[in-house]
Length: 293
DNA sequence: TTAAGACCTGAAGT
DNA sequence: AACTTCAGGTCTT
Image 1 (tube, rainbow, N blue to C red):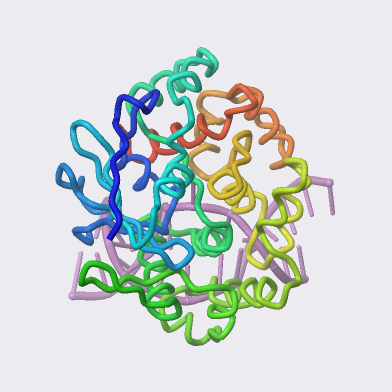
Image 2 (spheres, helix red, strand yellow):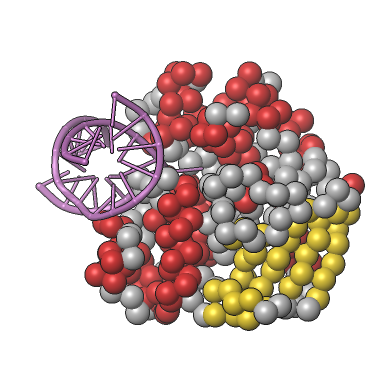
């Protein structure tokens, strides 16, 4: 086992692991006590994920972020949790706006994540008309049923399935696992990636709105899901996914941003939220409205 | 190009 | 206890 620590005072703007990993951005981590999206975790609780076949566990103590892994995971931890983002500067540069100020203030230390593109794509295909806790359990089920088992420290974890592994699933299998009408979307998208027809990571090479169009070619992916993949996996920080919570925020706080179409409304809200880091603002507002605190 | 309806399912609310 | 509503939308017509 390899281990390491990263001192908290190195992290500008802090790090709140609970809010970062349980705010509906990522469904690829699991909490040690198994109660993700249940109650708040005990202090020092571990979170676990599997990336490229390597198990990575992290937790925070008063002084540091600690990690344990099957490999030297510090660079990966820094990337996954965006530890090199100057969160303090990002918050300071955000537009002076009552709702934004309130959201940023209430959830200090919440960072964006950078998850693997394929797992993120499938997670958010599953997210349609779903509660975050159920999305998380659906993704865990897919890992358990189709992903590689990896042993670490006496425990068995499951990687999220590769495109080829998930492409072996049938629609009826996934319906039996509770995916509902999303089942055929997941199968067909996994087949597209496995067959080399397209890969979500290829969107990295494109300009933002072209990248969103590119991702919409996958089955079950519309503008909103595409924006989530761009924001939570491909580091398009200007992406502003328009979900039900953000739409209600527009209605109540930014009625001028309602331009009818997704593309135009999204563009208007992106400007309202300061452009470059509008996605950070979106994630704070989403979490703030959804949790009500 | 925009606008209704259908679509799985379980947890939460009457 | 049965019934209705709702959840990080997308697809089809």
